[in-house]
Length: 147
Image 1: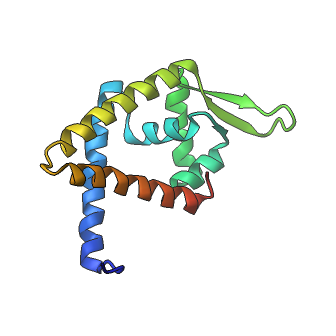
Image 2: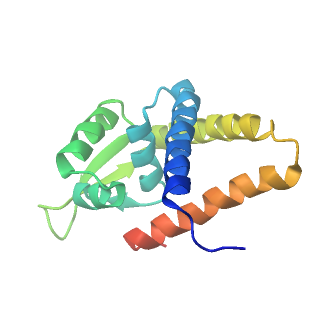
């Protein structure tokens, strides 16, 4: 088994990831979310964070996060809270409504990914598709220093 992936293979995989992201986007539309909104809700699941931390984890500029968060706050899915020890610090956290919408979106993504992977005739390939994504999640979390 070789360890190196060629540039052409990486390009093909990158395109596949973009294609897969669109499939996730189609799934979360059922929960009336965009992909950036889904990413932020997912990062806030069980955590709170300041905009700059969200931006770093998402690899975007803070104004981009602010625009998305503003929409989520307006919908009552996220709340802003001032830090008790540092009033300049504003944390963002999921509201109960946000947690509900995130669970709905997660269920829609689950259904969509299983529907697509179910086309693969070999159960080992279906399993490999998900374990490969899990490995990418671990790598991305390590890159941002998350657990």
